[in-house]
Image 1: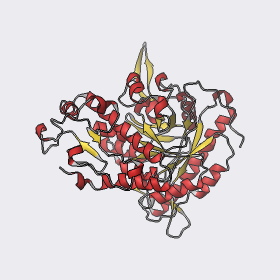
Image 2: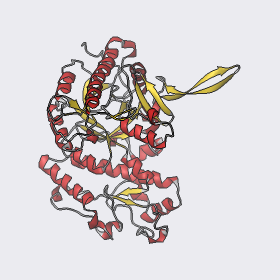
Image 3: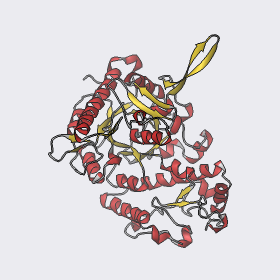
Image 4: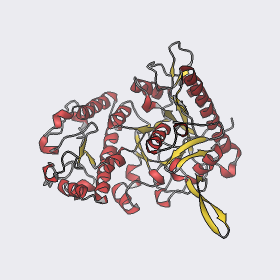
Length: 460
């Protein structure tokens, strides 16, 4: 396959600098940075200071779904929704490194839609796709996204990197879970379809110069496993066999010969039931050192720490800072210094004065069992969330004030918590990424992992 045409020159503000660190790929719903205005972004997360550790993820599922209308006489009436290729990214997001993806997690989208849908089971298939389109679950129903529309939408969003449309090997069909033979066929089809859509995307870059994209391509790679006989690939769900069948896919991707390929996206890694870290470590070892390994979705802080522990040049997709802020949670993990990495630095009662959950967060919202707001340890606490944190929230506001905002159900509480959570998460990833060697990184990883796994040591 011929190489991608010479890329169009980007503006000086969007030109990315060479980076080989682990980075957070922050999910940006509806194509905007969560919670913060451009002015707050410049204060809290200046692009030049977070370029080494932060990427913005723009999902076409969120950004390019547009309402459609039809003419009824002299009036225009709403018809519904459909995907459009004309959406443009907000100008104030241009200084940040951005990645365009179809969606961050097909299965999570489908499960969320099923939990709120009142339609019949036949209309609630987890993932249904054809060679012509991918069916996307959205807040406004399920809609078809074709490779052509996706390509032009990705060009319009002007991201630095793009993940082509991909299929996943779901074990659910329109009438419930698939049989073993059905799972084999479904996975085989998913692998073929992902390859077809990737080649279609690259072909459009090569053959349609006027619509060419200046972005690098992050090729999707399905993380699947062998069956008991070691012959037929099975989906990652519903099987306990640990041997991954991604080497053939990887060889095909690396030998495709186009210059725009700069990353690999491990599709389905978060669903692996065993040896997730080993599978990802082996995949990272097979990749060239200058090629990014990306995950689109991680669900816990423990998963993020796992990924950070395996090395450099990894992009970790997550919405945890946004999710924690929405749930009124403050991240309170203590960052150890590399010199004291062997010493487990627990969060003492005098430092935190609250119980941490499995993600190292303090819950601020009153529970249904305890509505008395005066019983929370932060009710009259004038200290910042973390004394050593340099985020805007910790520099300017006390725990008592933030807790008051939470109890008053003020949006400002979520904004301040988001600033703190994202700042501390970026510092955590930067700490692990900048470790002097693998041994130091492992010590830091074990130190942080101990804090979130031994929550009993933090009880008041």
